[in-house]
Image 1 (cartoon, rainbow, N blue to C red):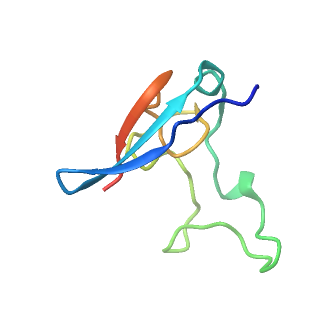
Image 2 (image 1 turned 120 degrees about the horizontal axis):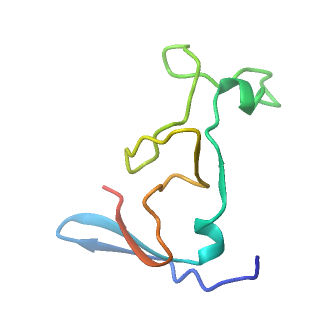
Image 3 (image 1 turned 180 degrees about the horizontal axis):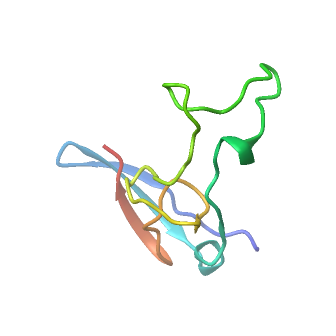
Length: 91
C-alpha cells in the first residue's frame, strides 16, 4: 500500500474527545482473523501468556467501539471505519 495522508486530528466536541482520521480503501479491504490467547503466543520478555484480567483465555472480538466481530475484522480497534474521513468518539 502506498503512503497516505491520514489527516489525524483529535478534538473536543461537547466535552467528548473525537478522533478524526482519513482511511484509504486498501485499509478497509484488509481484514485479519480475530486474535486470542493461542494465536498471540507468549510475551517475549516475561514468557507469560496473553490472558484476560481474571486469568481466562483472551479473545479480541470487541473493539474500542464495542462492536462485536465474528471470525474476521478490519485491522485495529475500530470496526466501524469506512473509506474517507471518519469521526470516532473516543470518550
